[in-house]
Length: 309
Image (tube, rainbow, N blue to C red; front, side, top):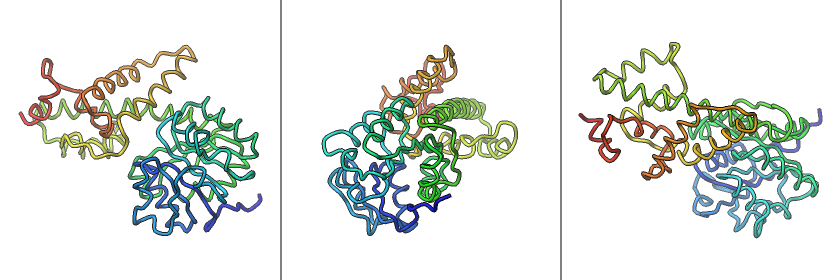
């Protein structure tokens, strides 16, 4: 195997500095990479933890002279804009460079981006991540990869800086397919924890003790371990936005439809998320699904009081 040229202090561009993208970029900077960064709002580019990174006015400027672009944006349209919009990175990428796309998008979009970049001599990996903001800050994300094995081998030093587990599932698009499965599992587990918390609270059980008793048994899950406290407190610090999970479930449901499958639990959770988004909870953490489990006839505006009864 040829030694990768993407070990620190290789030159990387990081575009998209949101809830996951910013801590990922910070982790890469701390690993010793030379970074050029850009994000739509511009403000996170000057985060003190990115000390030494060069803030750039556009995606095209960010990729100048870089061997790889690490991309982490919200949806398919954002990926399209970053790569091919005005001042997009696509035409400015150096032939021989690689795009490591950590966004969660439709597999077909990943495949289209790979094809278009390949025509310019640029390689592409779909590499969506899971593990929440906690994993992004700790550098322990699970990375789900699709693409050529040789491209993954080359990108591995970058991915190992942000991830504790790097997994290759096949050609471009396969990583996104696995991420869709991940989001189906997240939907069911978060919704189950929300319902269990609601039932326990209304039974007036000592729920912190209940969680401790159950989390290592058959009912244990990442959601129970990491998000039950937020549900119990009715306070939802951001780990992953409800609106983005709602978008991801749309991708999963489309994949299921293409296979002539119905996913009734996933569809029901997505409908619940839609209702919560209409009530203004789109930017809250997915654990806000607790707000969707109410006593019959109690409007959501009374949810906080309901928890205190």
